[in-house]
Image (tube, rainbow, N blue to C red; front, side, top):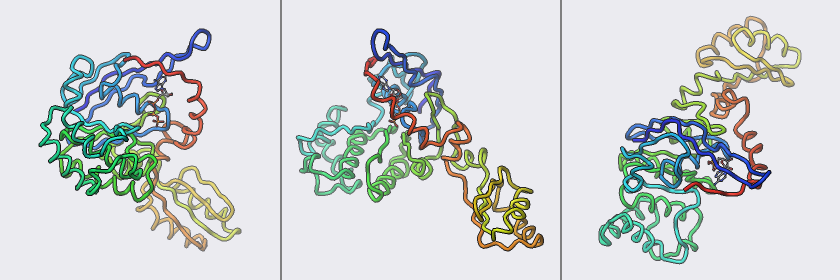
Amino acid sequence: MITARGLVQTFHTGRGKNAKEVHAVDGVDLDVAEGEVVGFLGPNGAGKTTTLRMLTTLIKPTAGTATVAGYDVVKESVQVRRSIGYVSQVGSTFSGAYAGDEVVDHGMLYGMSRGDAVRRGQELFEQLQLDGLWKRMPKNMSGGQKRRLDVVMGLIHDPTLVFLDEPTTGLDPQARANLWDHIEGLRSRFGATVFLTTHYLDEADALADRIVIIDQGRIVASDTADNLKAQVSGDLVVLEVTADQVTLAAERLGSIADGVETDGRRVRGRVQRAGRAVPGLLRDLGSAGVELDSIEVLRPTLDDVFLTLTGRSLRDAEAGESTDETEIETEEVA
Ligand SMILES: Nc1ncnc2c1ncn2[C@@H]1O[C@H](COP(=O)(O)OP(=O)(O)OP(=O)(O)O)[C@@H](O)[C@H]1O
């Protein structure tokens, strides 16, 4: 459904001695199969939206090639646009009209008849729990309702491939969970292929069959969440013991764990497949005379994966990015 080879997007910002090249996307290869739900994960400024904008034909790649739904993003951009749904980060509704009218107009832009657009629009309103809001202006909707309306706009023409750019950013937890259900339904009910960007780890974890991680314009990993976690981290085992047993506990944990650290009465270390290793560890601790106050086993998170791959945590990576933003003067390519 999506194939990209060596995709590059270089922005030129500033003028004169302030001129600067921003390598927003720096050689991205992607393969997304039909029916897959792929989560495109990375910190702010990693290049997610720029990649998406190239794949949805909104900007031309500086270099590299991509086909989407079988069409070349540069030479056959019209066909690409007809084949995809796109829910942008900023949303696509114009707040001065009724929601239903906007949706119908949008469908007609894709060549649907008014009758079909109304029928499909009403169906989607119902499925996305927007019933009763057909004659409401988007500006009078809640954030969650507006976001779901964006999703309706992206789906009105029944695309088999849907791009969602940070679909749940800014939503409260309940609205997020609700939208997750709908995104899951895109595949289960409509058989759609879904490519979504996010910087929420739990979102990628919950929704995606496969996670592609991008950092500084380059893909640093691509696999299922489970495989990514299994490859890089091991589970974190945390023991709590009395102060006089910390050294002994650390020594015993050290026999099966990497990177053992102590912190007050806590001893922690990373253990491969802790589920299998912990019973033996408990016996070992028992025979060494260590009495445990508690033991906790924490499965690795995608943040651990990111940390292992890049040496930074996703949150730190984001904090580091924000100062850059103000310097940038926009100069789009296409
Ligand atoms: N039109 C533009 N002109 C100049 N620089 C740009 C432009 N668009 C994006 N950039 C820069 O390119 C880099 C990648 O931006 P992009 O929006 O693709 O990141 P992102 O991963 O989608 O981030 P976010 O999660 O914040 O949306 C950033 O450094 C950004 O500031």
